[in-house]
Image (cartoon, rainbow, N blue to C red; front, side, top):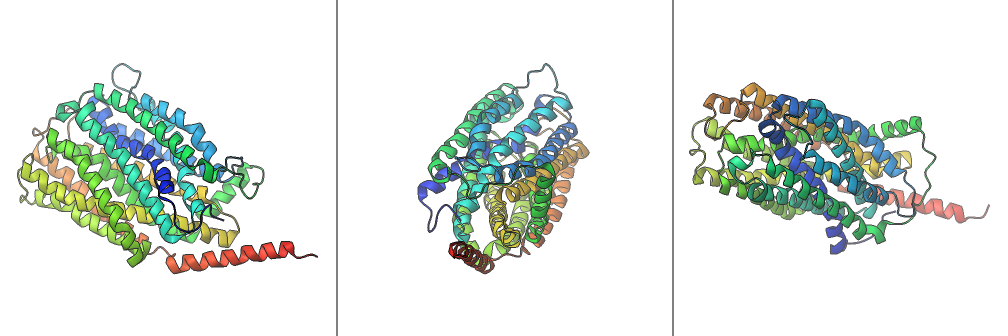
Length: 478
């Protein structure tokens, strides 16, 4: 039984979405800045940095399903999710600050980066998995679930864009600033404060709605039973189809984000003004997504919208690189080059987010499909499964970026405008070829997701009839 019926209040949408700011802070840091910070600033080999971050993601990905399972089985007067949010917020904020302020002299080791990256990611999962698992609990409505994810993505991007904008204008402004260590320290401290405020503030804002004893007390915890139930949930057909498409989509996203600062500096040769404009354009693309994704879902449904988004993002996003490789792009570093690139980025990123939000919203419908088959709900397991897929894939994307940079032969401590043209071309060709393959896989599988609006609504009606029958049976005297 959902916590609400009918349209959701504007306050609830905002308060719930605000919790995703923490994820946006993490995502912008890991995806845009961490690789270049540890590689170009602290002097670690790009391949080793990406390997450490990828390994941390894999470790965390295997922890996530257990976190989701434990969240599903938490039984307190504050409900199943809130205790996790209150407990993990402060340790997460502290770990985030340490990540950007390594207490070492010289170049960090592989093990040092690996350990702190694992700690940050596990603690973030302890916040994000319970938070996002509230979506199918708050509402069963097909479109209102999309609305909650629209707000989650909006606030997630707001958090990420704030950090990017401050990074480019306050903490490490200009091309030289991104190659200096001092600004990254402040970047980490400010991000830690924002993470704590986001997680705790969202939890407090939803406390009155969700803080009550769960309807059913779970059975005692057992490790064998835990893995059995996790395996059963992950065997759901709809989840497997989602995972196949989501894996490719998340690999592509991780690669695109982690390579962005490399191509922005060394391919497009952004100056201070262009770097400042970059997060603003990204935010405008999120605003466009917020407007178009609802009508697209109503017209085509979530699976077809996801496929359309994947193909459109690929074509629009790679167009500048294709024109550059063909020699028809304006001179990098000029106003014309910046303006044209941002035009493609605006709509390419919009369609990429449409794809991701459609895929995330699909998971909510898997919850009822599994409940119909098994008789139990497993929101935490499925959303931790999504994180399992996302983190394995994002780790692979960052690993691929590190290998692209290594294979292309980009030297450490390179300067914009001084990199050999053959190195730039190798980066573009490797990135473009891998992007095409991943987008086609994502579009194929996400477009074949087996639950549409009509099936979801019919399943809700069937579950409601079954619940009423159980109540009537319990009231009938023997």
